[in-house]
Length: 212
Image (cartoon, rainbow, N blue to C red):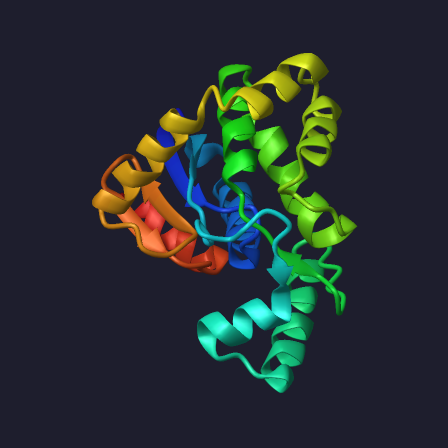
């Protein structure tokens, strides 16, 4: 039986814990499907915090102001996410002074990585850098180092980030998805038709993909 081609568009942000959980569950689903599909994944930008200033904001303060999250709720959520991540092979390292960042620069570097065939590698690297390695993913030098770690050219990464060469392209792509109705991430779109938002469990994703 020949594999069926499957295009998967993922709209996400690298500071969104549910985005990496959703992706890891998608990986499980695709592994379960085995020889049934030939998946081709395309990442797309979404900023959770467009107005966040450089340097970010304490994560707990940010969540309390944006969503009304209490300290007790934050502690419980972090414990749940850490456990879910561990079960999926991803490490969350939450700490008291953890900060939330704007990711516009990160998305510009990801756009460049896409052109070099390295977008998935850099996307996953940035998830780990932010959630597992306590790195400030709004800092140019941090982003350059992560780009180099996946095989991108250091000078080109720095030029992309300092010149803003892809800033307009990223904004336009973000706005297209918003205009298409994306209001929450992760959002997965299968074969350009069936879209779902949220970190669905792997069994539900298998069922959905088989129904296409």
